[in-house]
Image (cartoon, rainbow, N blue to C red; front, side):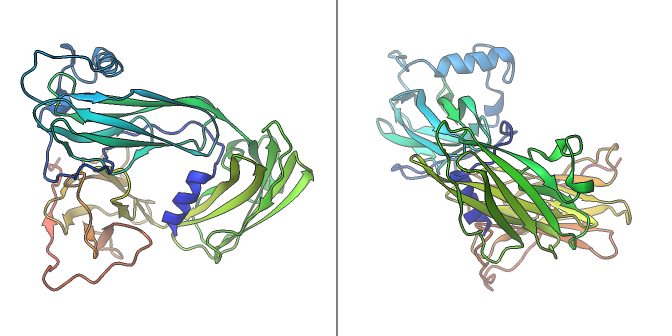
Length: 431
């Protein structure tokens, strides 16, 4: 269900703020060049100096950009190694509606006499994705790099990039940019919320005006929800909207749409019907438009019921058709009513790099762990893998987090030939 919802989000929009910037994520994208597994970046890759500047410094960042935004017309003197060339470094998509998906294919060629290894992809924003990327480009061969950018939550001038880290000894970073101008067909705001006295006023509605269909966290799952959104036309032409069926059909949410000023202003009422299970409940509201180049836009709806113990994420998805994020962070916290400690952590896959981070003294109710997946070509088996935490909690001795290909595909039974074997993770040193 959530995978389908993610697809609708690409077509839809939720007009909030600018997108978040990721920490360290890595990925790859598909191409005609066969993917090669087992390739690892040198241990010093993350600290490669640029023009003598330490990696991560402003000088290094400027050197990286200057070395990758100019045509690659270099090194006739180089007799070995790999060197890359792009057909273009930047693509301007012109104007587009907020909420649309814009894509462009960059052509990458290896002009060197040795294979070009692509170690990872670093997006400038979570809105930037690519398909599985070839891990190796052979000499005098090329590959395509498909750049996708989701314009949800964006308005105005747009510029984002993705950076490939390679084994090119002189220019290890390849930067590709997407730019353009994003228009907003309609603006939305919350004008009523049942959780506020009287549904809210100008003061109390302030914190939730931009949350739209996101109801946030609840302590209990038996609370009815109701929110009304005002939708105002900003497309520059009459805007006619109609409500499409809710996804999924058997949802805990329902919606009703009415025109308050035909072609200019609408009210969308969202109702949440308890009980809501512990964890996250999601749905998608889609509105059909009369705009020629924007058939519909969608509003995600969600609520999260937080129990005594909160696990984020409670499921790790490694989809081979999406950009591979190798480093995953896990947070476990409790509400303080029944304190416990984590005594051990384990993985069902011996190739996982799993470690519990030292606890922050300012957050005694929270633990954080770091999982590093084996590589950009690694995919969970049909039966999945498991990250397990052992605790001193009286009701929950173990906390399991599945690692799967798709959250909506049922797992196959683990075969007898692959018995479950726990590999210990790294615990922090004793204080």
